[in-house]
Image (cartoon, rainbow, N blue to C red; front, top):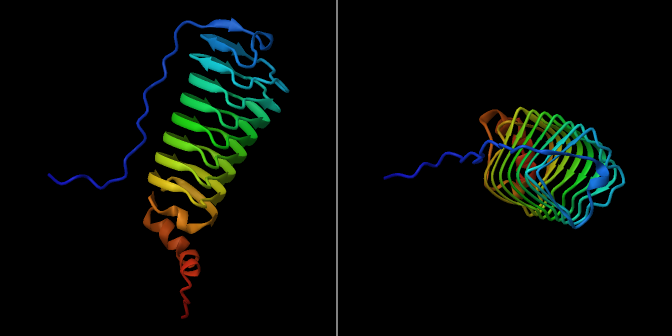
Length: 220
């Protein structure tokens, strides 16, 4: 029996949360386990939540400017309308997370683990995912000015109706990464595209870039 060679889609289950307990910013602390909480309109700006775990939580209309989430764990958590000009989530873990309708300036999520995540209807100035592991991740209706995937290991990652002003792929390891739904301005480190899927229109548009990368002279 012949195996399908089609690009595999992210495997994502619908996030269903239990009854949640209302909480406020002052209820949160670094290195603590927070479970079953609902934060509505909270201001977490400047909070240090390093090493905190959020399990089966909901964050709605939260402001998180310069919030520190280093080594934090977000598990089975829904985030909507997050406003964060700068968010430090380096070496964090995201699993079964939904992020939607948000505006984030600089999202530093270096050396992180992101699995089973759906990111929709959001805008980012810069996402730093360098050296992160991505598995079963879907971006939908997102605008990203700078997307840095240098050194990532990505499996079953897809984009739908998204745009990236620039895309960096140095030393990336990609498998079933579907870029057909991503409008790309510029790409650096083309060798990192191995394992990605493009459509014919994208390949045609990028032909001069590929030729330059391979040292091919094109003359009419």
